Amino acid sequence: MKNSDIYSLYQILNNISSIRLPAKTSFAIIRNLKTIEPIVKDIESARISICQEYGEEENGVFHFPEDKIDIVDKELTSLAEINVDISLVKIKESDLENLHLSIEEAKVLFSMIEEG
Image (tube, rainbow, N blue to C red; front, side, top):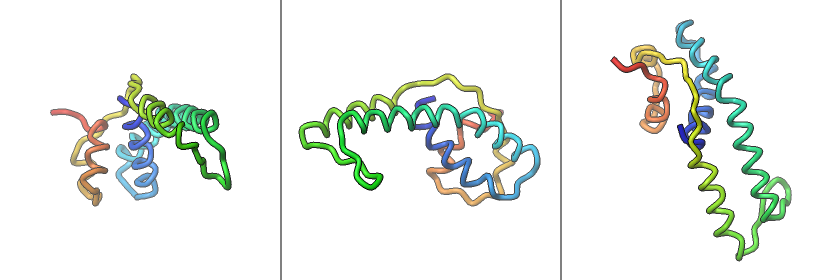
C-alpha cells in the first residue's frame, strides 16, 4: 500500500472511529488504526524534514524559495509513492452499510474489505 493511501486510510478511520458500529467492525477499525499510526507518524516526520530542509517555517506554515518548489514537490511525491507492506484486519462490505460514505471514503476503505 502506498504511503498516500495509508495516510488517507488513517484520516478516514479516525473520522469514523467515533461512530457507534458493531463490535467486530469497531475492533477492526481500532486494530487497523494501531497498525498504521506508527507509519503515519513516520510519514509526517519525513514530510516535515523535507519541508525544513528546503523552506522556512512561519507560524506553522512552510514557505519555500521559488527555486526549491520543484524539488520539494518531487521529494514529497516520492515519499507519497513509497510502498509499505501492511496487514489490515478485513471486514465485510455489509459491516459498513449503515455508514454514509463519500465515494472517495469508500474507495479508501476498499483495502479493508474482505473479498468473496
